[in-house]
Image 1 (spheres, rainbow, N blue to C red):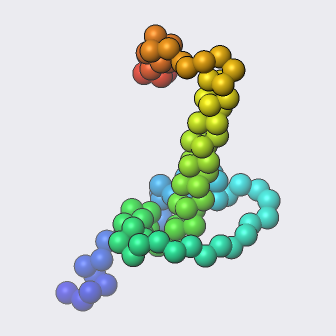
Image 2 (image 1 turned 45 degrees about the horizontal axis):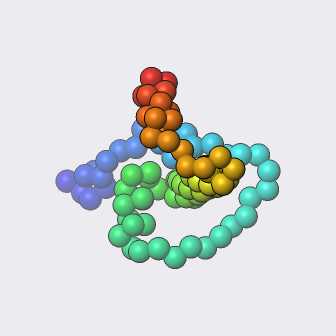
Length: 100
């Protein structure tokens, strides 16, 4: 059995998980960036998203991270204006999230 025969075969009729992320496919100009990361992290990403999907994954991850940062900023602004969010309100939000 040769090495190529033992590699998993990718079914290109089904999009990869990373291909489903819309951040990379958003209309408009793109910019190429170089990043430095631990080798093991890059290998794990490659193993999960497949060859050629790294940029789509990183675009989606960046979009997700920015959404979390912006959410934190909204909460900080709310608490500056109204004081800390009560445990009761947090629990109410958790219930709505679970029920959604």
